Length: 236
Picture 1 (cartoon, helix red, strand yellow):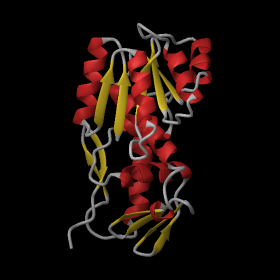
Picture 2 (cartoon, one colour; picture 1 turned 90 degrees about the vertical axis):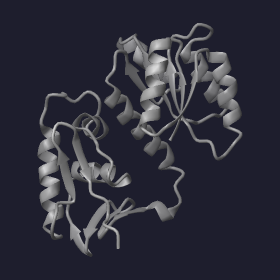
Picture 3 (cartoon, rainbow, N blue to C red; picture 1 turned 60 degrees about the vertical axis):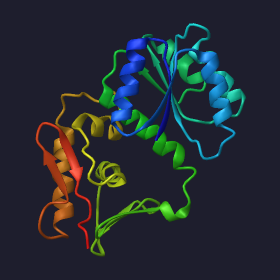
Picture 4 (cartoon, one colour; picture 1 turned 180 degrees about the vertical axis):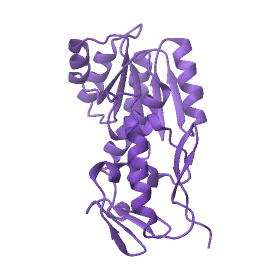
């Protein structure tokens, strides 16, 4: 994923740049809004560049809300995650009304930011994916995104919407470790109580349903203290 960070605070900017790069993202950083605005509009002329934008609301040369409005006026549809220390309802509403797709209040957990970026990326590209991406396969496990159905070894597995959402998240990157917090933010939203054990409960239910149709090691494994991963298909 390509991420453009527009943030004037050096500490936050470096933290995001290093953290996102460590997660495998291609990162560009800007400290001033006008320079970022021109660069993003230029990117929009290149069809192969599809970034997600992390935008600070309070920039030294232009308000983040004004920058966002300028992007939308220029027909730039890239998803925008707005960062701000302003957390009133009015501030959130005005940020979203300026054209931002999501809104994250400082200080924030990095896992939550990653989850929101992934959600924005899936939502944006969900309208641009060709039909060949309608199915996800990991070994004999298949998730049909259009029909919202799951089979393993040709046998249908009935899942609840939340179980399906967790499985889809894990299947998009088999082998990748997802923290409990990231799953919680991606599937239930950022406002769910982080102390709840609901992720553990749903993972147990999902694992039980998937493993009844297979043999050997569970498809979903736990790395204690870190999170969960879907085992990639074994080499032939």
